[in-house]
Length: 305
Image (tube, rainbow, N blue to C red):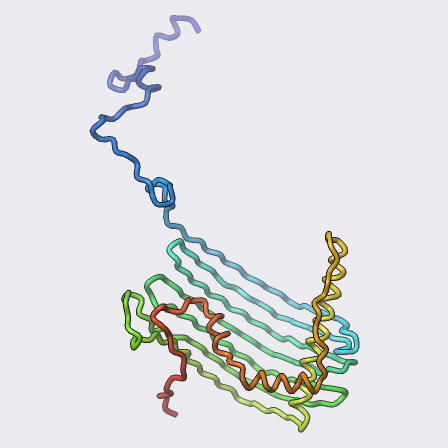
């Protein structure tokens, strides 16, 4: 470009001009305004703490039809499982301040399991199953869990050694469960008399519930459970042994004592008589037990019919 062509260009405004030294050199503040950075207990700066965050996950499942065929040797023979019209959707919201909101719904058109040609046989047919669940947990608030299950009709038949030992029909069932927490979240010191209470409110309704059993139904069901447990244990050991051939060392199955059917049934009766189920239920609950102590019992029924 010639010098004459630059005459029409205007220079920047005088008030906004900056020199090279002003743009490159950092600005310094007076010493009176500087302060020593504060460090936390973990050695990090206090200003480096993360900002609040929230994560939302939305999912949906749509399965038109699923058919599974398998052979379970002479225990259950040939099995066919058919499922159609499976739909599910839900959302999961988790926050940095321990907020949790979970909502999920599951719908099933029909599911049928048929077993033939084995020691244990029968079929289970479920029609129109719907489930809705909601979990709400926030800090400094009582948690809430709700679930509702609606089922159209269910038919089941269990066979053992070629004879039917159990038959049942269950139709138009509706189950609603909701918990209620009464825990002191604010008080630090509480006496032993102020116990925390957790209630579970349930409502179950159905139209038809019919069960046909025989004299040998109970012992046969115990034998079926033992046979299935033994079969699945052997299958797992065989699978682990086959997968261990790819590993560095051989697989050594655990040594299990040989228990006869009569002795196993007697021990099962003794264990059922002395077993307590509530500790396992409390472990499933996602909330820790309060330090002030908890009391487990049966609430009073004040409903009127």
